[in-house]
Length: 83
Image (cartoon, rainbow, N blue to C red):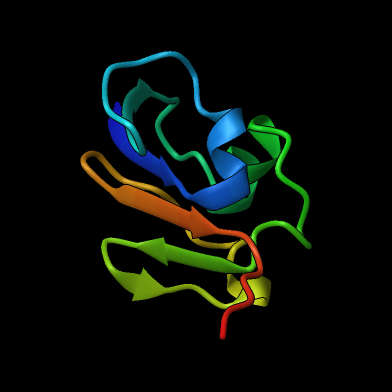
């Protein structure tokens, strides 16, 4: 199945090659769990500070049970600081 991943800031280094700056469409196995996707790209739990699926925040403990479906958009941000 196809899903889209969006990695921001320092996580962009984990994106596979592609034309879009932040987003890639990738093929994954049916029934893939969100946490498995995050680990597949070598993103540590500490780095995956904010995780959204289709614009909805997914709590850390819920990432191990959230099954991805065709067309999902997974967006991940590291911890950020600003002023």
